[in-house]
Length: 78
Image (cartoon, rainbow, N blue to C red; front, side, top):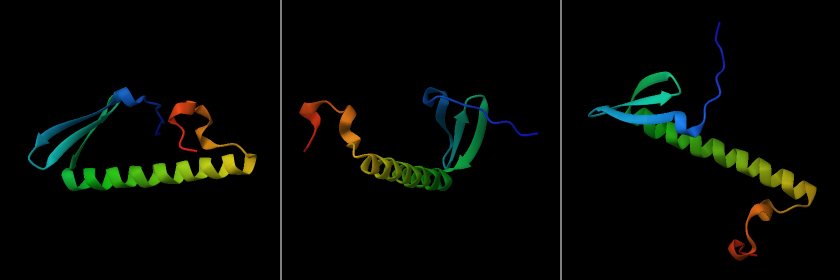
């Protein structure tokens, strides 16, 4: 039976193992992947994050609120 674990960002670690191999540690789980897979993973994460951000912006627009509400006034661009 597979279980789901929640981890914090601080529990994610990367380490170079060999010339084209890295270990990725998620909590107490460790995986070894090649560098090409690491590049692919980074692009997939960025793409997924963009989708999440777009969804949040869409929801905020529907509610009539600005996504930047938590940003200090001096940092806002509008």
